[in-house]
Image (cartoon, rainbow, N blue to C red):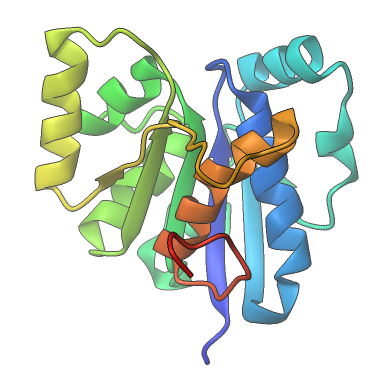
Amino acid sequence: MNKRKIIVAITGASGSVYAKVLLNKLVSLQDQIEAVGIVMSDNAKDVWKYELGDTSYENLPFKVYDKNDFFAPFASGSAKYDSMVICPCSMGTMARIATGISNDLTTRAADVVLKERRKLILVTRDTPLSLIHIENMRTITLAGGIILPASPSFYSRPASFEDLAATVVDRIIDQIGLNQDAYRWSE
């Protein structure tokens, strides 16, 4: 199996627990991964601190890039990153991606992933949705992106907040193409 190169962008939308569980899961799957590049908005750091009460994002074994670092390898298609996950993805970030505005590393990397026909996964969390949100989701889907709403499932009977978030993260990991031990319906 080829090792994966993955970009994880974290925006200021509520739902930092999804990003934390995703990053922890990627740590546990490092034998399948060549590289993980992380980019966080300023709001993402503030929301993480507010929602989770810590700055554990500072202690990850992955390279973290500044939100405006256009010299990051995944700012170009030549770096051949396989997948990009934006988790959680704010509606503003999604709108900029849908309209081709590459004003920071997150939106530039998303633009690169789409133009290279690689996998872009947006983990949206907002509700309710306006028609503008739905049209932006449509545009990104038509361009090859995947909208993966942070809609947890309950059939695995999650016992904690993080277990509940893991029901979404397991779907993200499946979309990236990594092998994992996860709850499967009727198995």
